[in-house]
Length: 288
Image: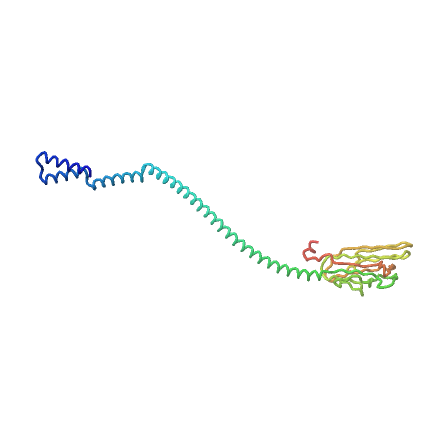
């Protein structure tokens, strides 16, 4: 404002000195002077805006090349990470496939094992049934094969048997054991109920002066003899034999003629015993 006032004073002085100016000239000069003193605000604002924009761009993007380099490095690093992840995923897929294969194999093995267990259980049940049946048959068969007997001469008291002018079959009346009832205490005869190997024993007891002798006979034939003789004192003798018998074969003890034996019930000196060792099949007999 001070500049404007000074300008006006100068103009007045100039008019006074030069004889004055008209109004138009004065207005033009004032307008020109005002534009010189106060340039249009639009240019100023445009310049200020350009300056602000440059300052803003400078603040926002201080170094675009550095940012690009940093971004490139980040992208490269991300690519490396992606490659590693891709490799890891691929390896994991392979591991998963291997695990799936193992799982299928395990399932198949388990299924096969289940089938095997079921078959084994079935066979076990069949074997168990068969075994029980066989055991029952063997029990029944063995019950028929349980054959054994043992007996002494005197059922009670004591005394001699003999001597006789001919041989006689001795009857052992004091029966200790008679499993299978193959021995007859009335006749003194053992009858074989099945084919097999049998063991027999005989013992005789007497006193000197008379012979003590008896033999085991099979089907009327002498097999072994128990014999003792001396002028005085106690006489004792025994013998045994294993015989192969067919069903119906008979075994018994024969007292020799002119011989005698003694027995005393509580002590049971003179005895006859026999039992089945084991049964025999036809082919076993043929090999013998």
